Amino acid sequence: IGDVPVFSDKVTETNLHLAAKEVAKSGSVVAFPTETVYGLGGSALEDSSVEAIYAAKNRPADNPLIVHVSSLEQVGRLILTQLHKIPSVYDELISKFWPGPLTILLPIEEGSPVLNLVTAGQKTVGVRMPSNNIARALIALSDTPLAAPSANASTRPSPTLASHVEADLKGKIPIILDGGACSVGVESTVVDGLCSPPMLLRPGGVSPEEVKQYGGKQWLDLVLAKKTAGKMEPVRTPGMKYRHYSPSAKVVLFNNCGDGRHAVQKYMEHKQCKVALLRTKKFCSAADMGYSDFVERNMGTTAVEIARNLFKDLRAVDEMGVELILVEGIDEVDDGLAVMNRLSKAASETIDGADLQ
Ligand code: TXA
Ligand code: MG
Figure (cartoon, protein in one colour):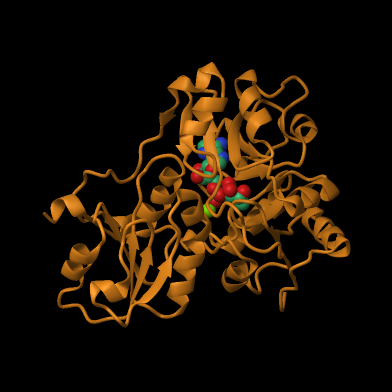
């Protein structure tokens, strides 16, 4: 494969048909926009397609993939066996959040066509119906359930623009459908309603508060799967062990540091390097902190805005060749939970204001 045709801006009907034909072939993959992040899709029913996904991303094969559908009818016909239907525990969540950024785990039974390679050998399969029109058209036209992880190279921040996909996967995939910027900006929320109490496995575009509010009474005791790093842990968190969502520059996360002046000055003592500052709610400008040479981005003040800009801004300042990215954390409530989950994985060091007093 030489140059990747990037079908820019307006994805035409012809381009969509071409991509749908491509993605239905065994062994082929296509990058496409969703409302969360760009996905790298291949048929969930073809070993060679799923292998091509892992190969393009350079992803270890022990992490299960989400299967994307364009209709409920496809779930019954292409994912579950004839004997089974979607467990009723999901009824209210599906009517509220599908299509949208919510992934549910469905049971895999004998005879299910979904591949072991997709589920990584688990007894469940993660399924979601994206709300992005291009994504749904691609799936509907190909009538193929698409296994699709985020379309970044493994360990890199997830792509929220077609240019991010191009930067990571150029030459490795045949088609990138360009649908512009992703509106949510972080991945889907993954929930398991098959266990009791039900569990939130990954925070994302739908907040835990919303799951509880709209899921029906079984979801009221929703529990969050254990995080990798707790708020009260010592200042240094070993982020390097599980690099994920990471730019090349070192990411330092500042929590509870007020306007940031004191914490950033303390952190920057005796340091001489090219720095980017990603502000959110309370940090003052780099100039007000006394640094005229910092690259600076304001990611927004609401968690929803910050989620939309997070991966884009991490990538943008990284491309400018900074060595350090200082990021202002936010409260881990509502949509802030997903933002902080991604940030704590991207960061190799966390500074907590409470420890600086
Ligand atoms: O928003 C999204 O979900 C994006 C877009 C492309 O749809 N996709 C995405 O896929 O983020 P990926 O592969 O990067 O993340 C899939 C997540 C992982 O955390 C994986 O462990 C979890 O979903 N997952 C998938 N199937 C699972 C299963 N059967 N059991 C437990 N966790 C599962
Ligand atoms: Mg991913």
